[in-house]
Amino acid sequence: MLSSTSLILFLKGSTKVAMESVSARVESIGICLPLISVSFPVSVLQDIKKQKVVNTTNCLNFKLFTYVYLLTRLGRLFTFVKIIKNMFLKGLQDKFKVKSGLKYLREEMERPPKSVTREKGITSIGCIVDVDSFPKAEVFYELIDEFELRPNAIKIIGYKREYDKNSPYAIQMFSDKDLGWKGQIENGYVLEFLGREYDMLINYYEDDNLMMKLLSVKTPARLKVGLGAQDPKVNDLILNTPMNDFKLFKSELKKYLKVLKEI
Image (cartoon, rainbow, N blue to C red; front, side, top):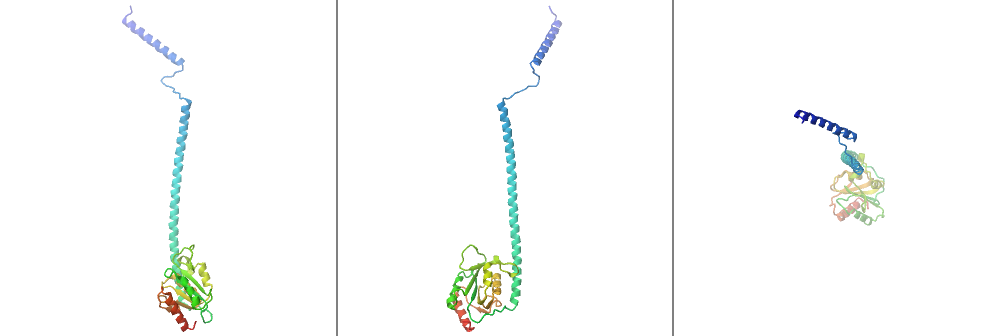
């Protein structure tokens, strides 16, 4: 019979042999403890790769969208700044044009009027009409019958502060936008109007308006007729009639032309 001490030694030896046997068995089948190797199916690995590609693509798309959005906002900002700058510069330029035009007008009104060598009598009439205040400017064609003139003896040009060049008008028009430097009026109709000499120029406006006064002093005419509210330096004959009463104006004009022996 084994003693207790012998039994313990026997058990220790047996355990050691058993452990060595298990270790040898593990090494023989290629298992390395404590590392554990896990293998996935091929389809799962492919799905993981695909998901990585999708995530990368989505990330790139988001960055691209962000860049495009920022560039668009910057472009709009630059456009807005450019518009404000152009508006400021145009306003400043228009201000200096007006100042230049007023200087030119003062100088022209101080000079003696240019003489027009035409025989006495009314055979050609030019009319500058404030269409904002008197829209029916075509009534001046009635003077053709009133003074027994040729059909093309009257030239009418209308002024509006703002007008649409594409809109149809019964007469030729010009506006504040046509003001150039040093009192020049950059409008083809105005140049055509100034290209003729007149026996009489009718300045049918009441406002102290730079554009109409510039055209009045530039127009070559032997006799200039205006309304009572105008600067007397612009006209030779002033009729104190209401602007909206063309019939009275026509009657008074005919009466004074007879006095002056023009008709």
